[in-house]
Amino acid sequence: MNKILPNNDPGRQREFVSLKPFYKINWKENKLEVPKPIKPEEWDAILQVLQEYTITGLFAAEIPDTVMERLPRLDFITRLGSGGVTDYGLQYLANIPQLLELDLGNW
Image 1 (tube, rainbow, N blue to C red):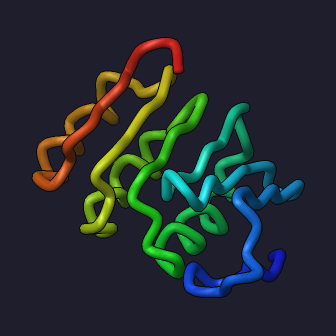
Image 2 (cartoon, rainbow, N blue to C red):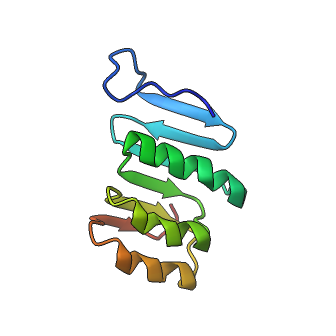
């Protein structure tokens, strides 16, 4: 995994991009973007980064059911967007009461 500069590091750039798995972090908006589908096993790295840096927004092209099931454990997630969540995966939204923003359109 790439080493990411901490949020309080003045040398931190506005955006961080990882190539494997591919994702972008926008520090200013405190969100992580996964613009294209990734392998299910790559989601472990994404969830770890969200946890480690307390990133409050997750926006992904697709979010598998197994990841939707794990999202309620990240009690700091307040913004979620995806164009690919199954009906089964949607049930887990009920376990994310702190969610303030939800976009299930063509993200």
